Amino acid sequence: MNKYIERVLAETKAKNANEPEFLQTVEEVLTSLEPVINAHPEYEKAALLERMVEPERVIEFRVTWEDDNHEWHVNRGYRVQYNSALGPYKGGLRFDPSVNLSIVKFLGFEQVYKDALTCLPIGGAKGGSDFDPHGRSDSEVMRFCQAFITELYRHIGQDIDCPAGDLGVGGREIGYMYGQYRRIVGAAEFGALSGKAVATGGSLLRPEATGFGAVYYLVEALKHDGESIEGKHIALSGYGNVSWGIMKKAAELGAKVTYFSGPDGYIHDPDGVITEEKLNFILEMRQKDSMHCAPYAEKFGCEFIPNTKCWGVKDVDIYMPSATQNDVDIEWAKKIAESGVKYYFEVANMPTTNEALEFLKAQKHMVIAPSKAVNAGGVSVSELEMAQNAERLYWSEEEVDKKLKGIMKNIYDSSVEVAERYGLGYDLVAGANIAGFQKVADAMMAQGIW
Ligand code: GLU
Image (cartoon, rainbow, N blue to C red; front, side):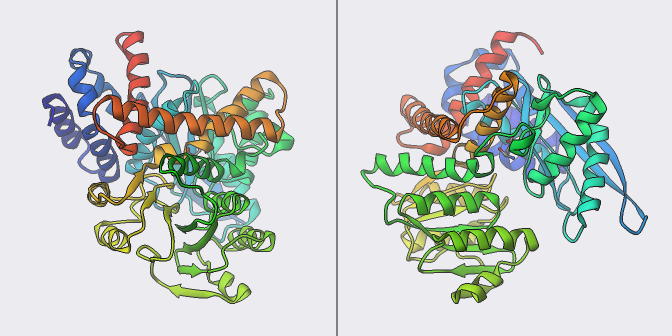
């Protein structure tokens, strides 16, 4: 391996020994940069990699809020403002008990290269809290969001940092946070948060954007192999916002999601989630209970397989892990490889362990695509929301959709082009890492020491 990469990896491991998820993503990205680092010896003198792995700013804060029984609770809030060389920090907020500094740093690091890949002027950040929204009333969620943003507001702004949603943070939570932000700053500074309801400055198509974008990217990759999406069957994990967007767009384009899952097990619906009734049911099911997908099987008379994952099923064309990090480890990866299914497209952030990803990439019959490219449609439409807010107008759904399609095609094309240019062949994973990295590197080199 390149000596410079080796040294920075070793230093990063020594400095951040208690952050396994963060180290996992740094290792995955840095090792794939070998050809570009070899070609640019000047990066070492500029301490470029050292600067890239170190976040520009880490904010940790206390969030105190009162529940419906007047009991007080304390959670920890985070915002890791990773890199702003390309523009204001941009990235989601995650509310989940699993949130800790390692998780936020891994998501922030990924976000920098994902946001760069969109070719839009945004830097990368991520944040959130270990707050558990499950079972909390609407008023409790509102009070938590208000307390969270009362602390975070001083660090964000339309030209500084624009947080959005992620796991546990949807339109409702963004609405409460934006309301409180507006109240504190006393200005309709719409661009300080994205993923807002359309009535309050949100963009049409934002809720669907990540899933739709993933399918647009998939369409490009299929085209490369002379294939069409029509008639294809998809197995995915999760039934959240992103999975739902994939189900909807796949159905519109003549494909179908025949497997999906929740923390309780997976559903097999051979007819596919293609009707409006089924899509609406999934929305309702998630709103009521994001931990159980079994009710879908009862309602539509299909199979529910408890306490396991659908990886390894043979009667699909594409796998799309869309739930959360490290969903697919080496054991699941072996089942996936044995199934003979050709396409493995990551959608959730880092859904594959590094060992599993290496193993899958080595399978000659498979095409692997990385999440930072496949799921970049969400943050892209968030940036389009910021652009609409800055212009004080709304674009039509057609206009946003057209732009989203163009962005996804560009992400795919540039990943393919850059991998070929560095002699890596058709490598969508390394291509995305290098293309994103190159944008950030160019900006950082141009801006001098910082
Ligand atoms: N959390 C999403 C992501 O990882 C959306 C971020 C955004 O819209 O800023 O890209």
